[in-house]
Length: 210
Image: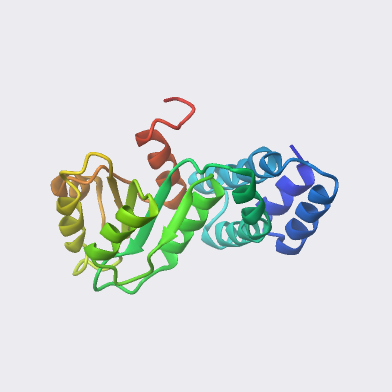
């Protein structure tokens, strides 16, 4: 692990992350080692601190943006090297809802954990999710809602994919509960971004305890 890179991601030092990643590449450090050895552990650490209320959303956001700065440099090299993401996830705020802060944070945390993320944006209908499954290799669909008036659309999406055993549907957002997830037949629910990553890892059999 490169402690300086780890700390720079955790503390949201975007410029330092870019500098360190470029320096490591110039020294022929393996691309996968940069990502999985220092950057991903940093995002996991910040997520665990968030879960313990040791850091809050602003700290999570700046760490995720610093992580993204490093990923922007590494992504072309990872693709060229044949690096495979853990899974491909489609994420969006559901139809009728334009809120995206929580959705964006989950997307950044998933990228930081090694997933490929297809961000479908806001006000997303079931057709866009289906298109992502058909054309982008998506096996996980993640739905966000902030409004009680739009959360019912999650049921529409969950029912749409209910017969497809290759696609898992997870939900989250301020008005969402585990009980509602169970009621609509979703595959899982998380109340925060760190928990969402752990949920996906667990359900896909990727977690360390799995």
